[in-house]
Image 1 (cartoon, one colour):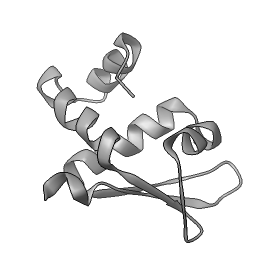
Image 2 (tube, one colour):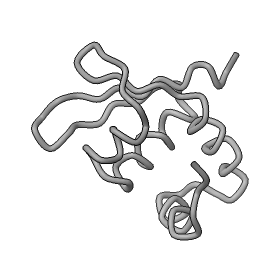
Image 3 (cartoon, rainbow, N blue to C red):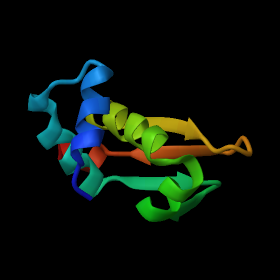
Image 4 (cartoon, rainbow, N blue to C red):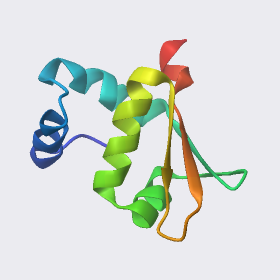
Length: 86
């Protein structure tokens, strides 16, 4: 998944810079997502929490190794980006 121009504008509004895009895009490629002990695809995750919430989680995970977000029904989704740092 490539970041769209709209994604980039949103990410910049959160305080990230254009220099951060490469790391965020790399995290998108290598990250894994877990819901209730099961790994799910990025596509499934985005359909559950929406693109903006997904971007929020992946941006945090890209620089901190992990992040968590909640689905609308209160389930925790974990973002695992540690492979980015190996």
